[in-house]
Structures are given as structure tokens and as C-alpha cells.
Amino acid sequence: MALRPATVVPPDGRGFSLSVRFGGRKAARVPRNEGDHLVRTESMDQQTILGIDIGGSKCAVALGRTDGKILARQAIPTEGDRRSPQDVLERLAAIARDLLVSTKGAGKPTGVGVSCGGPLDTKTGVIHTPPNLPEWKAVPVRAFFEKALNLPVRVENDANATALAEWKFGAGKGTRNFVFLTMGTGIGGGLILDGRLYRGTNDLAGEIGHQTILMNGPLCGCGKRGCLEALASGPAIARLARESMLYGRHKRVLALAGGKPGDITAAHVVEAANDGDPFARQILDEAGTYMGLGIANVIQMLNPERIALGTIAVHAGDHILDPIRAAVAEYAWKRSADVCQILPAALGDQAQDLAAIALWAVE
Ligand SMILES: [Zn+2]
Image 1 (spheres, rainbow, N blue to C red):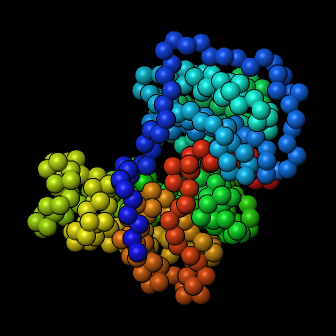
Image 2 (cartoon, rainbow, N blue to C red):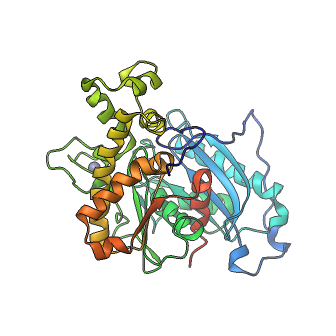
Image 3 (tube, rainbow, N blue to C red):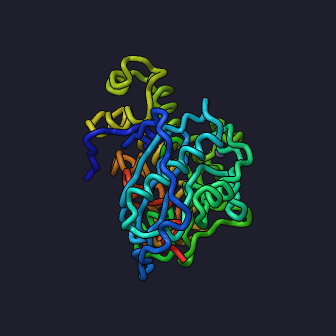
């Protein structure tokens, strides 16, 4: 049965859930070592972690526990086009200090987890010009927060961090070999292999969206042609819908986009498909087949036991999962495909917060 959410979020899935205003308010500062007298929790599952999610449109600071419970959070728009990286980081540090004051009873955090779009270097904690934050050139995020918050800091790219969160708290729970794939503005991936996050030689493992699926295919944002991301991501689904309009069966999708072909997004296609529109279902069928082909390659290579898919799969449900599973059955070995479940991600709106916190929820 298809999942039918009450509202379809934009394909990047990053709506604002809570905002805080900064009307010239001076941030409260935690006196040095103030939290030291508080009783430290014993169990690994009850440690307190400060999670910082840095996204292209919004950032959030959350205080949570290593068992996945969020105790408090605040989000702000990133405004990366008019604020310097330093400015954004200072605002986040101020929010973090406020949160720590307001949740003093929760105990001093064990560490800070920072989840951010890559590329970034997990060893140095330096962010290198992510596509969603083009002004962030060699920003030493870990060094900044270590100094600003006086706590140990781990930095991870958001796809890997979300993979850890889904593995620890969501759709990948209980598995040893798990693959998480984002399916929104882009297609990113995170690999849990033999019970550990696999990063590769220089943090570039899991770039599943940039495997070549179609020789001389559409141009990808990465500069190559025919990448999976250029065939099955949110923007690719919107492009498929616009291009297929020539066949004249597009009325429902076009109406959802206010009659403007240029405004069609994957969210419109998903909404129309959920309403039973055959044109929209055909578009998702095509994108899903490409996605399934890419996933079949992953299954051939890694033999995972579960693969969870983000945003579009969550909102379109079986309208995209059915063609994905059909392509996997066709292109992957049966013995590999038979042991691999393909299902939607489970953490929903909490994924970003839990991603940052999950960095300290694993060994
Ligand atoms: Zn690419």
C-alpha cells in the first residue's frame, strides 16, 4: 500500500520546523565548567550529545541522548548567501550555549556531533565548499566548535551521519550491513558495512548517486553525464515530467504547479501519483527503474541486508518502490536480492537532528 502523507514536502525535505529569532538578543554564556558538578550518566545509551545540523537552507542545534531521544532543539535559517560562515557558526554556538543553560538537568554533553553537506574531511573537521554552501571554503568547523563549546567535536557528511542515525534508531536497526540513500535534491549514500560506517580512503565512499547509469545521458550537477542522480533525483523527476508533457497527459501535474511548466517539482509529481494520476505514476515508474538499476549495482557489490531510501521514497511509497524492486529483481542476482529488504527511511523530520547525535551513538 502506498504511503500517503497529509502534505508532500519539497524534494529536499528540509522544511523549517521551528525557528528562533535573534532580535539583537545577546546569547547567554555558560560559565566555564559549570556543568562539571552535574552527575554524568553511566550508560552509553543515556549520554547527552549536542547535535548541530548545518544545511543549505536551515541549521539546527539539538540536545539529545545516545538512545535517540531529543531533549530540546532550535532551528534557524542558514542565510548562507548573506552571512559569512563565521557568522553562522557563532550563531549556532550561541544557540548551543542557550540550550545547555535551559537543559542543565540533562547533564554535561559527552560531545558535539556536526552533520553537514560534504565534501568535508572527517580527520581535520574542515568543510570544503559543499554545493549547498558555496561560500564555505575550507571552514574549520571542528576547531571552531571545540573552542567555542569546550567539548570534543565529530564532523561527518550528512549522508553518512543520516545513515548512522537510520542504522542506530530507524530503518536499519538491528542490521550489520545497511545502506542508506537520500532521494531528494540529490542522491547521496551512507554505507554501514560489518557494523561500521565505511568512509573510503578520503571520505568519498557511498557516492552512489554518481555511478554512471546511462552512457551520454543527461548532465549531472557533478559535471559527468548519465549519473543516477541525473536520472532519479527530485530535479530529475521534475525534468522527466516537463519533457514528457509533449505527450499531452500531464494536466494534473501541471495544475499542481499552478499551470507553469517551469515550476513543476518532484513534489507535484508525487502528489499527483498519490492521487492516482497515470502520467505522474509513469514518471515515477521511469525514475524508479533507474533508481532500481543503481540499487541493483549496490546489491551486486555489497550484498547488504537492508537498503533504506529517503525523502521521495518516503512520500511516494510504493509508486516508486515497486519499480525500484522490479528493476532490482531484473538486474541483481536473485540470491543477493532475496536477502536485501528495500524500504523507506523511518526517521522523518527527526533525521537531521538524530544524524548529528548519532555520531556519538556509535563506538
Ligand atoms: Zn554526478
